[in-house]
Length: 121
Length: 242
Image (cartoon, rainbow over the protein chains, first blue to last red):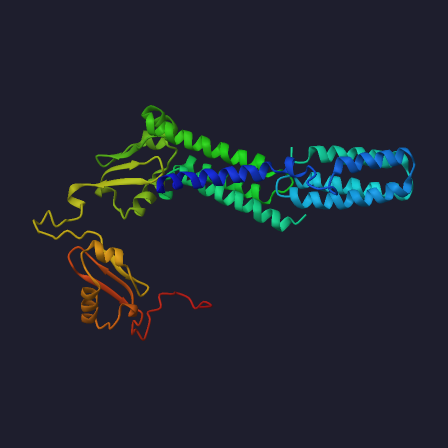
C-alpha cells in the first residue's frame, strides 16, 4: 500500500496538472444558459443584419456578461493574449454599436469569434 | 482575470512538477554535478519560472518543454548508467594531471587548463607544495582528487598499531524536549533508564533537554535549553546590524 501510494501520488498529481492545463477548451463551452458565447455572437449578427440596434445593444451586454463568466473559468489554462484580444474586440464592438456601424460591428464580432475558437488551443 | 491567482495556480503546477521530476533524477549530489548537469538544472529551472509567470502563452507548452528536458536528462542518466562507453563519451573521464609527481603538460593543454589553475585546485585540497603530490586527477565534475606521496600522508591509528573503538552513528533519544519512543525501543531502553541518565546530567525532566543522543559506545550527549553561557564569543570581524 505504502509503495503504491509513493508511485500513485506523483502520477495522480501530474494527471491533475495536465487536466488543469487542458481544461480551457472544455470550460469555455457553455455550462448554463447565460454563458453561451457562440450563440450570443450568432444572435448579435442576426440582429445587426436586421438592423435591430436596440436588441444588438442588449445582446452585446449579455455577451460581455457571458465573457466575464467564461474568463473566470478558463483563465488558468489559456493564454492571456487571447483573453485580451477578445476583450478588445468586445470594446470595439460596443463602439460600433453606439455609432450603429454595421460593417465594423460585424468585423469585430467575427474577430471575437475567432479568438473564442482559439481559446485554449 | 486575476493575474495573481493565475500565477499562484501555475506556480503550484511548476513547483510540484519540478519536485516530481527532480525526484526522478535520484540522489545525485549537487557537488558531484558535471557542467552539463549544472546547465540542465538551470534550463529546467528557467522553463519552470516561465511556466509560472509568462502568462502570454498557455502553461501546457512550457510544461511540455519542462517534461522534455527532464525526460532527456533522465534518459541520458539511464544511458550513462547502463552503457559505460556512452558514459565516457557523454560525461567525460578523469584525467591524470600529475603523475608520479610530474605535471602532465599535454593533459593540461588538452583540458585547456593553466598550471596556476592546478595550483589553485591543489591549494583547495590543502596542498601547497607540489613535491608532496604523487598523483592528481581532474574529475569530470571539475574537482581535483589528490594522492599525496606516502611520506606526506597523515598518520593513522593503524600506522601506530593503536586499537580504537568503533564510533558508529548516534541515535536521537530526545529532540526539542520530546522523547523519541521508537528509537528508545530500538535500543532496548525505557523511559526510566532515560530519566536516570538525564538525572546524572542534572536534568529533572526530558522536556528540559533540547537534544539527547546516544552513541553505540553508550555515551550520552545532552544539550539543555538553558546553556548558562553568559558571554557568547563573537566571531564577526566587523560591526554590522546584528
